[in-house]
Length: 162
Image 1 (cartoon, rainbow, N blue to C red):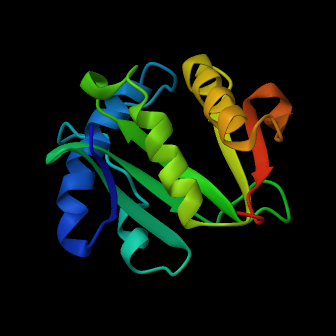
Image 2 (tube, rainbow, N blue to C red):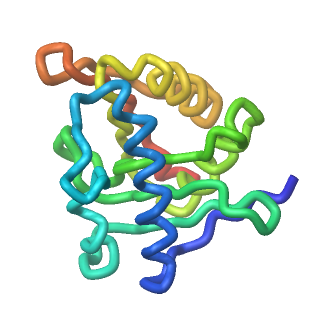
């Protein structure tokens, strides 16, 4: 199965914007966020991914079909870390097939340095996913901390040597 993770151009923004609504719908299980008066969740930071140098948007395709997106940025909780996954979304039909792991590995390989991946405490599925993916990618060489008085978990690793 061919999986492509490609940099998203400004022309791809509507694709990510539409998939972001699906992502936030999935995420509404974990956060108390409401639809706006137009029936959208909205995502206030999306435009910044095409105007700020420290943000990197990606489109995910399986074969030729849209399958998700990844937003990488350099906004970290822990001083000294350089990269963070801002948002990571794989369509439900492509989950539980190893696609998310392969996408994450491709993204990690694009940016060498100190990484952190944050999950809110209520999203235990994401915590399990990231522990597994990062554990395999780093061969177990990562740390995990709980922050925000137990409201979030972060896995940290350094792939500078890659």
